[in-house]
Length: 331
Ligand SMILES: [Zn+2]
Image 1 (cartoon, rainbow, N blue to C red):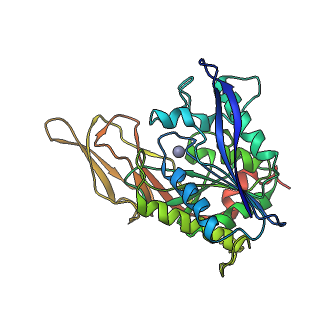
Image 2 (spheres, rainbow, N blue to C red):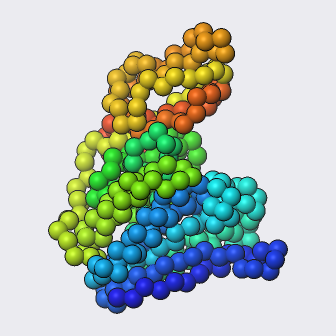
Image 3 (cartoon, helix red, strand yellow):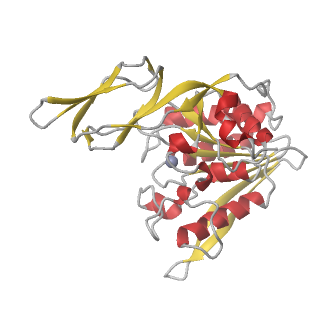
């Protein structure tokens, strides 16, 4: 097995330096799956960077026995350097600029560069690591883009989500509030590449417990794919009932919110999730849960404004019903 370091060039900086993406490649030298692990497309979501570093140091002790792993520890270095979600050149959210265009806007060009580098290797799976708020449980998100062409792609993504072992949910345009194909993993699915997003850890700072959890979960995927020694098997059955994200729950008022639920809590329809008080301490709004579901995360802030989405809530749904809006376009 070999481990190599390479760079994917993106653009030239004002100081004439090449702005580039660091790429780690572990090659077993044998046939097998090609898997990409990427992190920090949102520059302040740093946990994935440490997860990738730890996975590659584990390869030095427990070699890859089949296939190849490509990893980009930081997809957005300019955002990472200033601890910002956005890239520094135009302050754009890179993860809303896929498919990308080679001669489009700056973020579109960067997105196109990332996508073409990944697709050129004909990957079997892509795992993109993100971070939700401090007040979150680790979870996996599977995009369901309307442009999905092949049902098998989605089923393979679900298989990886289940193998990782974190709670997971399907995300559609309705729940995300934007077309999932505008983000990296959604676009990959449209291109026929199974791809999932892990949300783990805190923003801005690496928390070691989450790093370890992420490494172990991804290692189990390597085991299940036969890429490293181990017992883990792929979970290839698709459950009838799956979690889907609800639309984000927002407040209607400006005030100070007290959260009454914790991430991971199961909630009943009508249960109070939070209460908003005005500056005088008077209650001005109560936020009930619209459904029976589970809280995956809530925001890390106490101030709220009208329309600010505060909770990530999932509800159990029928898998086939979720696919209804894409099914007529699929193979
Ligand atoms: Zn993110």
